[in-house]
Length: 86
Image 1 (spheres, rainbow, N blue to C red):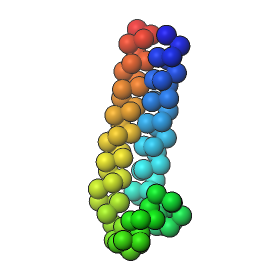
Image 2: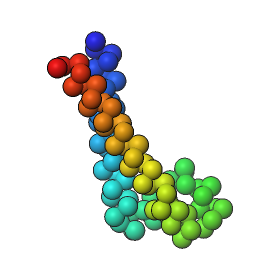
Image 3: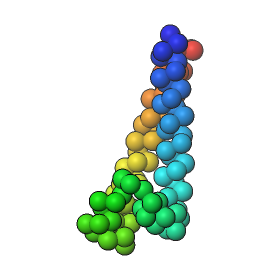
Image 4: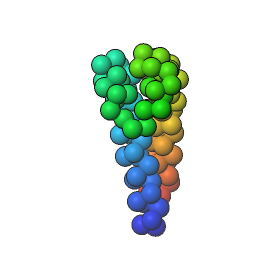
């Protein structure tokens, strides 16, 4: 029971964290550009496409996909916690 509780709490909290972070990146062009410049994960994208195109691609496809994943994490974690305690 405690392992299920910890896993589902991590899913719930991780979903909230990534959801909030992605909304901030989606709303603020400056925050997204700063993230793209300093993130080691975005270096290959910036080197291949340039900062403008990489930022545009992230805004159009990757951040919305991240929001869907964050919503799924939050939903699964919340649903499982509800099933454990109901």
